[in-house]
Image (cartoon, rainbow, N blue to C red):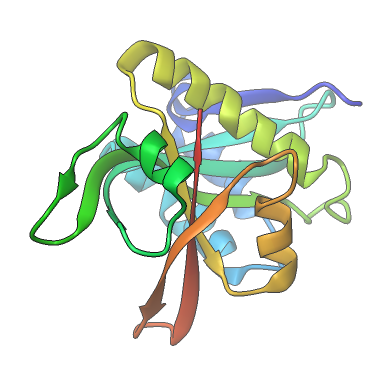
Length: 194
């Protein structure tokens, strides 16, 4: 297994300047998800400067960008219907059931973007599980510093994505879905606990 370094984009800006980071990100290529590529090239720096979300760059031993993930925190509503009793029990550690809406409102860590860079290779430099472990390591530090215990993400309703997020390494479970009128796409909502 290769050694990777995860760098907060704000630290990278402080170290090499905004123009240097924009240059690095301008080569980012993610043909499997154009939305991620667009975000990295056009929004990652501005979102980080506004503290809306923070993108982390995963760098290999040669100093090349191999992947990114973007983290934020978000209020999340989880319906009480259709989730297992064991999941409800874990959610109740972080939230109370609102009887009026029959749902839980929790503060969750959001994995907002998650993707590999294909600009110089076939995306096989690190595995998806290794990238998830990089993200979870950053979230473990945040959890230690500020509390919380729920991680949340959304993905397109594609079998290979759902299989990846729900595998024995990543432990996400489905709790809902959302349809976006903007991009006419159904998103599956998944969560996991620390």
